[in-house]
Length: 240
Image (tube, rainbow, N blue to C red; front, top):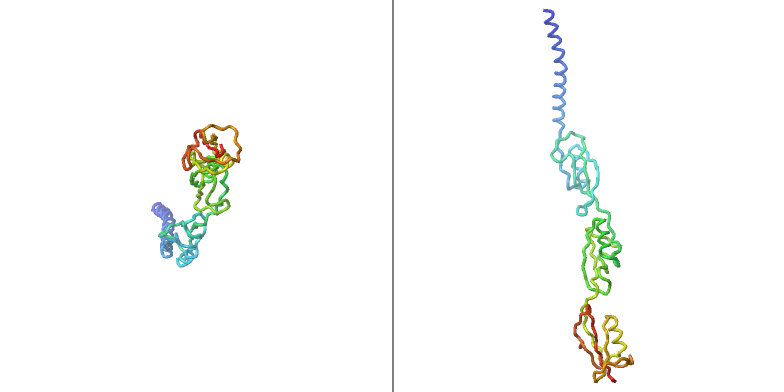
């Protein structure tokens, strides 16, 4: 009989801790349930708006980071933890990340540089380079202008450069008639056009005073010649 009483008493002492644990858990659960609240959604709100909202829920707000965003107003909340509708206890904190404006990018000088070198610089900086090709007297594949200009702020990480294609091989023949031979020779030399001088009878002349006046020419004024090929210009001298 005594052994049975001792066995029962020993078993009862093992039950007491379990009952205490279960009762304390139940009390804590009921207490927390009465003091629980739901996390409000603060994404898209300013810090000031979010502070008012969390204070009304007896929650706190903590800033844990910033992220660059050129579309949202600076200070706008873009991420929160816990997320909205998550159950929380009073005085717990919602951790947020806000938007900040990117550091302004200033355009560096592109003009006078080869296109491939400029493209390499833009690739390193993860920027977009837009190219517009145009004919000019500058060497081919060199940047001759840019937008925005050097030193101005770059919007959306994009810069437009104007790239030389070199001079057009097509040349419109000017009217040399009535002008001095000297002026005509200077113009022809700029375009690598070889002059051939003739008198009125059609005989070719070797030595002519450059002050002489041109009476006629071939090709005629307004004609189009291709400078990529060898070109000659026949000039008839007035006094011969």
